[in-house]
Image (cartoon, each protein chain N blue to C red):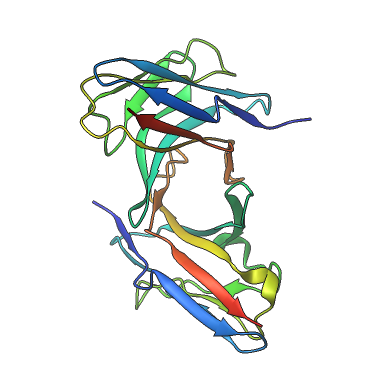
Length: 111
Length: 110
């Protein structure tokens, strides 16, 4: 069953802690993306990767980091430097010309 | 930088009435435009893209370069059309990166 899996679905973090969100795909897509979804602000791009071992900052990369060591995996770390990390995070992947396939999202709450 | 504007955060339409969700973009070149939809408790998914010139679930959208618009239309709304709709723009044909609008929540009134 092909698709994108994001885990966990819900995540709670204490202030000052780093936390890593998982994103795995078995679609053999080259490109992967992380977006942040906030009410009234739509989807904003955090980081994206077009190939393994390469990634670029999106519009709101500050306070986040990523890695792309395998084609299937694109984990996102929310660091303590992110001032307002409570949000819904969406991972997506794409292959040329076919649009995005999205994961089901991770809701991160800072407590 | 490119930008996508969806002026309506909320839109309510009676069942059977026509639907139009507005999308305007700012980009001087030739972009590729998309509509994505998120139904309740489902993942965000592609609805249609202008390059395909197709009709999906009765929805169509025409790219108007003069008005820099890509409005989504359906002649007769159905209750199952209630969802969150996002317009998106791709400008760099070297990669698939999309810029999204802020979204419009469409509610169909029975």
